[in-house]
Every structure is written in structure tokens, then in C-alpha cells.
Length: 476
Image (cartoon, rainbow, N blue to C red; front, top):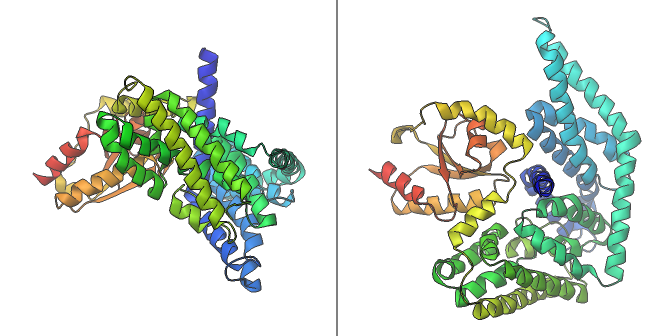
């Protein structure tokens, strides 16, 4: 049992790292997707000259950004620069877009640079620091680029081709909808990042670069299954779950924050069958109409989905989302109506959701140990005139933290409190943040990142009494 928990924590941590590499660069993916959708020969506004941006962006820009982000996560800017340099090797060493290779080379380069600095940096004589910094990073980057060109690039290229061939076989056999048997439970267990960013998106980009669209972008991003579950709670739920579901449905469907419906499934695990049924039916509908997106839709909002929809796929995509929602709603309604009572409280499920996000990995353990020193000191409480920026932080900086920031912004607006509220990933907490709000399992990591800020821990981003306490404190 302990080995299974350890393996699960590693997979979750792996998913968080993949998310951390991809999420900060989503705007670049969207830019590439828009250029592709508009200017390729089959696009809305075909333009041969502007379409020349397509190839270099997918071949060089996007993988290099991912590698830089991966290296920076491990060893700040120094790791990012070496990671991007090393990624050029895998980019040149393969004949397919090297997203998987970039996800390997970025963190690897950052980690090796960190180890080398730990061994040699303190032994450098005064006056030679800049010489060491530049040449050590340059030499390591060159060696890793060569390794990528001769070894990792061809290997990852071969693996990508194998995976692509496997997906093609599944598509031709008409079995692609069955992938949702894995994807939907993985979403609720927060293992979706490893599947989505590690496999589906790279393969989808490869398909899109050749065919102009890919159905793979919608296997995980389809908002239909989650919307169906939330609508079922809106009609057939009880208590807090029923009253909160309509607002959650708007955030999930329009805002694209799928994370918001996970507590509802955790509250009644049998609803995972509704999500699976919705996902399978949605993909089947997409296949039936040969529909797809030109690039990844992130976040998974219906707005982002439609913006990335291929020119000839609007009917299929809209029906795919609608059918997934309808089937998910029907199965969820049946489960809710036939069950005697609700299996657990929504707030308990939300807390359970946060605990499932892999916060106790070995890496975090080191950070928690480093942060323990801060816990011994008196907690920081800033005065109102000292507070200019409040930051909500979570793993990726887009799901839980975005919901919490939105709630606090509304409370501030109603009480005429003019203080900036934003959301960031833990690793991207700005130095000028005055208050950092995190889930209780993330607070130690946030303290290690920015010990000078006041840190507030919450049990549930969706509904915490500490928001009202903070409003009263700043108002009075």
C-alpha cells in the first residue's frame, strides 16, 4: 500500500511539473493556434506569407519556451537558459516537433546546472565568478545539446512516432472514445497533466501541423462532461452542493476551470461513471463529424474551444460538447435521484481534492523542511497601508488560485477596497506580494518562496471564512 501511495505521489508530482512547463506558455500556444487557424491554406484568411510563421513557431518557439520554463522551475533563470540551449539538440535531432524532448531536456539541464554550481561555485576565486558562471553554463549547454542531437532527440522522436501510430490505430479501429475511461478518472485524481501535456497535446500538435486539426485536443478539454455533472447538482442536488452548482457551472463552462467540478465527483465517487459516459459520447460525436481543433484549448472554456475550432468543424465540436453534457447530465441525474443521501459534505470533498494534488512529494518535503524555520518565528501581519498586492497561489496558478482570487475580488469590490488581487503559480509568486493566500498544504512552500510576505492558509478556496476576516480587517 505504501509503495502504491508513493508511486501515485510521484505521478502527481510529474503531472505538476508538466503543467508548470506548459501553463506559463499557453499564450504562445494560442498565438500559434490563431495564426494557424487564420492563415494556413484551409484557414479563414489564407495568406501564404503569414502562414510561414506556422512551421518555425511549432518547431522552435514552443519547444524552446517549454524547455526554458522547465529549467527555470528547477534552477531559476540560469537553469532556464541552459535548458533552452540543451533543447536545441533534441529539436534538430528529430523530424517531429520536440515537445516531449523539451520537457525532458529543460528540467534535466536545470538540475545538472544546479548540481555543478553546488560543487564548484564556492571554490571560485574572487573576481572569476562571471567567468565561471558564463563558461560553466555554456559548456553544459553545449554538451547537453550534443547529447540531445545524437541520443535523446532521435529516441524521443521514435517514441513519438510509436505513440502517434498507436493513436492512429485506435482512431482507425473506432476505439478512441474508450480513452475517456482513463482520462476522466485521471482528471479528478489530478493525473491529467501527465496524460494531457505529456502525450495528447504533443501528438495533437503533430496531427494538426499535418492535417490542420486534431480530435486529440478535445479528449481532455471538452467542458461537456463537467457541465453535465454540475447541472445535475443544480436540479437534483441537496444543500450546499445544489446552491453552489449553478455558479460553479458558469465558471467551469465559460471560465474553463474544470477543477471546480472535481469536489462534486469526490463527494459522490459514483459520478465518475457520468463523466466517463459523457466523455465517451462526446468523442464518438466528434469522430462521427470528423471534427477537431487546430491547437490546444486552454483553459478548457467553451470560448477557447470555439476559438481553436477548425473552420470545417464547428457543427461537430458544438454537438460533441452538447452530447457530452447531455449524457453526463442524464447519468448524474439518475445517480443523484436514486441515491438515498449525499455521500459527504462539499467542503470535505474540496479539502480531499486538495490533499490529492500530491503535496507530499520528496521535493516538497525538502521545501517544507526549509520553511520550518519560518514557522518558529512570529507570523507576519501587515497593516492596511502596507498592503498593495494580494496573491493567491496554487501549483499551476490557473485553477484553484484563480477561483479564490475571483471570489476575493468580488468581496473587495462590494466593500470598496482598492487592493490588487491576482493569482500565480507557487514558483511564480512575485517578490512584491504583501499577502499570499494558499491552501494549507501549500503554505510551507509559499513561505519558502517568499518569507517576507504575510501568509494566509485556507482549507477550501471556494468558501473560506478567512476571506471575510480579511475584508473586515482591511475595511475597519
